[in-house]
Length: 203
Image (tube, rainbow, N blue to C red; front, side, top):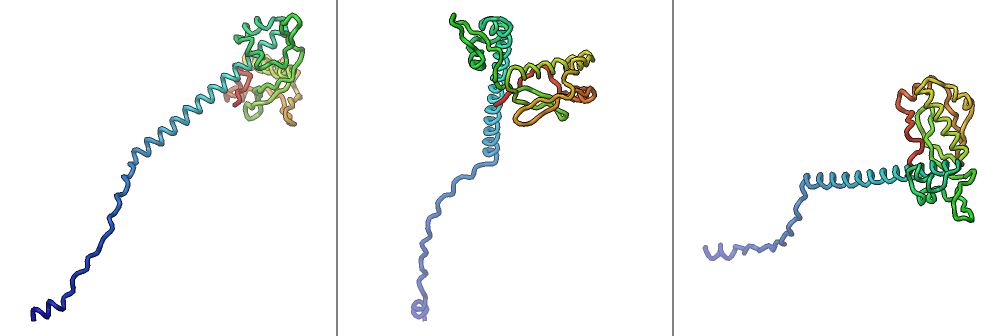
């Protein structure tokens, strides 16, 4: 009987299991968060440097144009650059097309120019950047800002009379010079009229 039972028994088959590859270690959430913070910090630093560079360029351009205006009042390039807190090289960089070189190798400013200036301009919804072409148009905007400043600071609105009903043209569009005193007061109260910087910084 024992032999029959042994004969009826089947030998167990051996299964060859494949060795499992060890799974790569999972990255912890803290590591992912850390990398995310580092990426955001790097992006923020780059953005900050870009903004500072743009602001520096706008300041350099504004000073170059200020020097150009001084040259039109008789100053030499060197003296005009010094009074505008810039250098002759910077003036030539941003206003080269408005400079004329005399036979004496001295520079003088042309009576007019077609240089484009990005100027701040008030609208009924706040300040916008307007590309103004030419010294005459830029001078007009500057004169308007002086009139607005005098009204806000001293309450004297006489300087706004010449701009009543007038517009400034750029890129096929027209923007009116705001002369409504109530609206100007509202914009000033909202902090939209800042007089320390006429030029707008562009990337």
